[in-house]
Image (cartoon, rainbow, N blue to C red; front, top):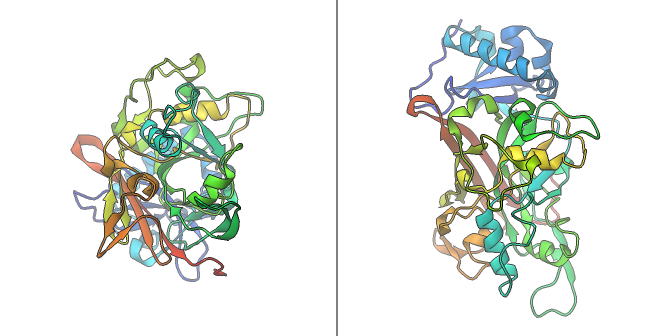
Length: 394
């Protein structure tokens, strides 16, 4: 039997207990919980086949009461001694995509981000479109291109028309960007033709992950009128391997910014689900931004309510993301197009001044949130390195 050592300042203590899917050499992927610098194999610890599966989906589908029960059981287990065969060092396991992604939707929930892009793209018009403060703007992405942290990202190719060019050309993206986001995973779905009210958020959503929604800005700029993001977004979206349970985020709950005008009734929250999550963005190992999720105008409960407002289903394993997280200060901008103001204000990275991503660049996003009694809990990280266009990763 093993007593797991959990340092007092660990971001993965008993207040967190995030879920993931891991494997060791020669073993099948299965569900584990991170405790300190260890992974606890839940199938080995509890003998339950639902945890011997290669995704969290079967467990999530069991519903809220089961999530509460298992969290209590895991807390009791790791507070004492754990069977030796169920404990593995984090550094010695391989982490996998934690869920079978059913659908993927990305929103545009930061007023600061939307306003900055409005000023960049429409300098002679109001920064926000007339609908922005009435509904959470979003688009449907491609679930098949959601990848786990550590997966290399191939520079996409597509049509782009640079300023001064009369016709578009086809080729590798010249303005490859990131978007630092928080993603939410639906645990239990809804029936077609019904809506998920904001009050059901906490019992429908299983947990949260870090998201980097890679963006080809030049491809996006040429294609997005009149239907919005398509090939400039669909090539890759990275998520962190650890899913922080919503049950762990109670101490991080804060009000959203004042919403004026008042949202329509289906979007109104009696107790808003703002979250005090601090992100950090590292470009080739250098911290360049600290986006604050607490500044997001629309809450994740409102995003889910709007996603299903027309009767569209949500399913176990659905992933929906916040959109770029940005604050009012320059160092709080969660996308390089904002941070460099469209490439006009380069950022110093080592001995160079940079605007958009070059082949070989690596981006890592981390995050923490308040836990009980002044502690912090961690989301781990989401990392990706850029490979040249045309590289075959198989």
